[in-house]
Image 1 (cartoon, each protein chain N blue to C red):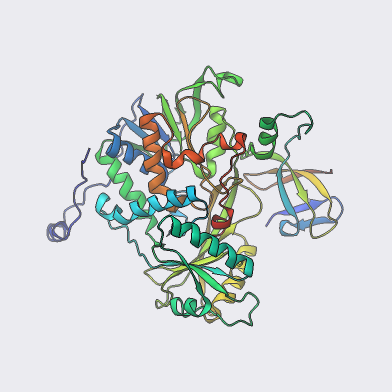
Image 2: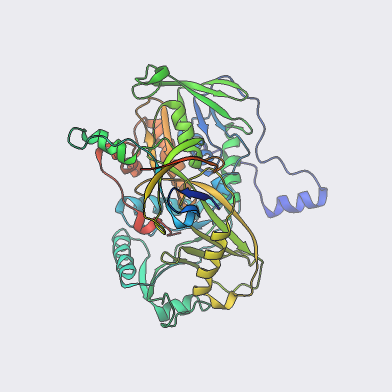
Length: 82
Length: 429
């Protein structure tokens, strides 16, 4: 079980939220080339290490926020609303 | 070519029984050389099959298969051993059907009993939309000559009498996609068979050898890696190896290895959990899959029920079991087969799946010359192992992606030409 600290609802089981994956900077859609846009859509670092990722509190406040999680151990640190 | 490992036969069994002589080792523990023609990273089914077909079909034998642990210790030993070819896209169907052909003759080809039980495969439909997808798949399959058809609930009951087909359940069974050539295979035997077959051709299987870095020069990224570069070898925990061709067959760890060559992948790693019950009398004659209930079940020759599910929703490299999985699995299995409520789970485990956005693999050459990938095998790597090895060996030998994998190249993600298999592969084991 992974306990995720929602900034609004407090610690919740990860099953109450949705993991939206690692944070990837979004290129400007009006200037990005198709290749840049598709790299944003599909390519991931997928490290076995600390990663900044987005979560969606689907079972509670429905806010999006980012946390840092170590994907090798599932430890969590830091958290901010986004 | 055409070299055969020492025969396993009734005669050999009697001889060894009487003389109590040692059986020959299935593969050796060779000394590592400082250079090879091809280095395959990952000693699972895909890596070993690639090495075997390189030697058997193309005569390339100066090959090393390196694994950080022991062979078959990753996804090859953790899957639920189901094989089938009733996919959704024409590319997928042709590819997986070739794999089934290779499984059909594998016991003879490798002279090892892989315990292929061709018992048929049922994919249940619980909603009208699921039934529609089943009809779609059946038609695509039939067009390519694959034995696949949609059957109604009464026929499902005949195929698998333990299923509850009454219509007043929460997820009533409306019908199923029936695929008679599907079945289950002893997965460890397949790994051992390929390892033994490759070893006979003097391929080096280097276990407990971890790859620490891939050496690339002339690339556009940091350290000369990345697109435009050329592979020169690998650094391992037992020393450096120089090699003009390096192949990534590392499934769940694919991104970590690929990042060493500077080639980003469209992959996220998720654990997939499975479980097995205590053995009981054989009562389930086919493989049963339910996409809506996220479960697939088969009964082994020992009588244990093997359950698998969809991947865990949170990507991680940690492979511990969770109570949520067990709870959900038990609930869903009992929806299908209320009669087994008293059975106990023996154990549960999980393996790492390298998931792609379109549920199809990423195979073949990459922007780094000499660096090939065989990754993105998600939840369907076992059934594809033989054909992946065969086509990858052809790709290495000829330098161009084999026809069967031309749709699975890494460039499809930048060209926007995805091969959507989610309808047949998400939980479709």
